[in-house]
Each structure stands twice: as structure tokens, then as C-alpha cells.
Length: 361
Image (cartoon, rainbow, N blue to C red; front, side, top):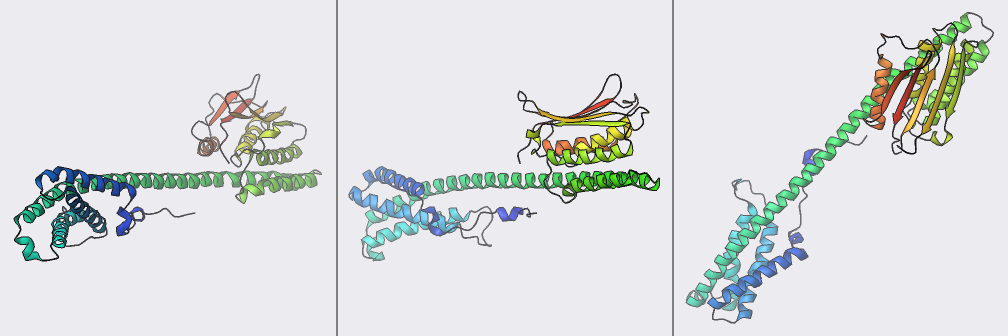
């Protein structure tokens, strides 16, 4: 069984600095740079292409600084200061200074002696800070929202996986409680016939072999089907028929088209064994057991039933452990809509019906 990933495993991986240069992010930055250049152009004496070029340069540097800050987690930085915000705040004046120094050949003193360039530096820096910080904060909020949604989906997946694993374990436990009961009960019946010296002993042993052959796939954990369950029920009833040949009659009416359906192992046999032990066996006249399965094309449900003409259901009868376990197994296998219904059969007897919607293989 695959292990469930821990919450730490869901942390976003480190990204390359250039990962921020997506088409959408570049277009947004270019649009903001053009807008800032248009807004600042009336305040500059230089041509618009120069102002636009400086704005574009600063904007792209801020985009790279924001992306690089994602990889930066300094321990000395207070938690209330985001590295991306700090990177944008520092990169804005530095990028603006670089673009102005390039215009004067790198001569800082020449730049400082030109008031127009200094005022342009201040205007572009302040505009870049205002726009850059707002955009950076918005991007961080969107990124955190996306991470929160991703983490919520991851936790939901982990919870669903754990619930499925718990359900599988519970289903296996319930099945493990039932299988030994049938096996040991059948062996006890065979032992009684062999010890009494009954001439039917060889036939009983052959029926027991057929029964174990049908039950073995369940014990080995193979995928159970309604067809497998039908074979197991037939082998079990043949075995019981050897034990009381004059008191037991049975009929199997399982639709062949339904034999490939997934069906809980030993579930149908639970009802058949109850019909034998509590219905037919206590009756002096014995009884008839009918086992069937059919599909309702209108509701889409499958109906599986076991009816007997035995002693019937006592008024004080309460569901036993086997039936309670069966209800839980059916709901674990088919969902909460699966039902097990018990009703009386006139003039005497009991009919047990399983109603469920077939699950996907």
C-alpha cells in the first residue's frame, strides 16, 4: 500500500529565477511600464521614447528581483517583512540609478550636477516603488491563495486516502471474522457424518472439497464476484443436502449476466447459512431455500435474495452479529445506500434481500 505523503511534501518546489518571466507576467509589467511612462512624460523634457525605455528597464529589473527573492529566505529577516517586498524596495532606486548612470557614461558626479536628471531619478524611483510594491503585494496574495487551495486539495486527498485505507482495513476485519465461522461450522457437520458411519460420507467429503475449492479464492483475497458467491453457495447447499437429503430442497436463480459483478465475499453465503441453521434445520418438515439475483433496469439496482420456508422469524428475534457485520460490509462495499431487508414469508419462512447499486470494477 502506498504511503500517504506528509504535509511537508506538499510544499511548493524551488523555482528558477527566470520562472517569473511568463508571458502573462511580462505583458503585465510592460503594460504598467508604458502606463507609468505616459503618466510621467509631461514632467520630463526628454523625449517619450527615452522615458519609456527607462521605465521598461526598471520594470524588468523589478520583475527579476521579485522572482529572485522567492528563493531567498534569510533567517535574520523579520517574519513580517516579505523578501519580495524588500527586494522590490531595494531594486527600484538601484535600477533607476543604473539607467541614469548609463545615460552619462557612468559618471556619477556628472549625474549629480544635473538637477533635471536627479529630479527624473526621484520621480521614476517613487513611481516604481509605488507601483512595484502594490503589484508585488498583489502577486504575493494571489500566490498564497493558490498555495492555500493546493494545500487544501492535498489535505483532502490525504484524508480521502486515509479514510479509504481505514475502510479497507475494516472490511478485511469483518470478512476475517466471517470466513472461519463458515469453515469450522462446515467441518463440524462433516465430522458428525463421518463419526456416525454414514454411507454418504464419501459424497459429503466430495461436496466439502467442492465447497473449499469455491471458498479458496475468497481466502486468498482474489477479487470477489457474484458468480464466485453463487458457486460457493451451490457447494455449501450440496454439502447440507448430503446431511439432510429428505428435508432440504433448494433452487438457484442467479441471472447469468450478473455473475461478473463485484460482490462482497461470503455475503450471500451468510444469508444462506442463516436460512439453513435458523430456518430449515429446526423445522421437522425441513424446507425449501431459494437463492436468486436480478437487475432492475428502471432503478438500476440489483436485488439479491435468499428465501426459505423454514420455521420463520421469532417475534423476539433481533439481528445477530453476522447480519450486523453483513450490513456494515455491504455499505462499505457498495456505499451507504446498500440495504439488507428481512421479511416474513407466508405461511412461514423468512426472505432476506440485498439491494445495491453495482459499483465500478
